[in-house]
Image (cartoon, rainbow, N blue to C red):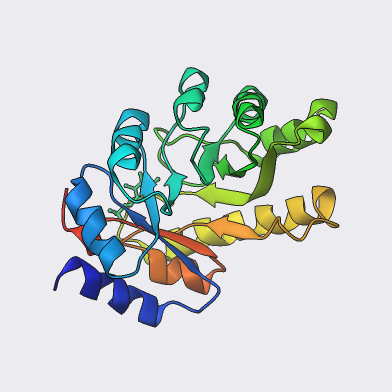
Length: 220
Ligand SMILES: *Cc1c(COP(=O)(O)O)cnc(C)c1O
């Protein structure tokens, strides 16, 4: 199947409220263009330089999502165009995104990344860290970021019961934060979870955004 058919296939099986981020990291701009020509507009990258290079040569109505670990000193390179940053895990980073977005008179959508996997190598906060971040008085003054939800990656394992439990945990964190901090903010509604190997389970557990790479573009 080609790229366009893969995307159509996935979309056909996703509920209409679930957004598909096509993860194009390591793939050439031509592959993104092919998906674009088929009508897809939302792409995810995890390296700043690669994102900037691709954005420069591809159509300007692409909705770019940054899904990787982000260093504060690199926010400035994408602040003029990035739509959503998925992996915010500190107040320092959130403030820098706000500062750079302000320079371009933009609002950048942000997701708080949570560590839900058993593996220790993955980035992200726990509930206590996130509550501390959101309770900080400075957060109320960040007018150029919109905290729209949470993001997480499940353990890379064939144990689907474990994966399901980790997605359930992220959903529970989302609900708690919604009640505690975002009860009057309808834009806090996104749960970014699910990749090629586990997105069906993620959708069953409440995902609103799936990040799918290899199923669409082939193995990296
Ligand atoms: C690479 C990546 C994906 C996509 O992974 P696939 O298994 O290729 O679908 C999703 N999320 C993040 C954060 C990634 O780095």
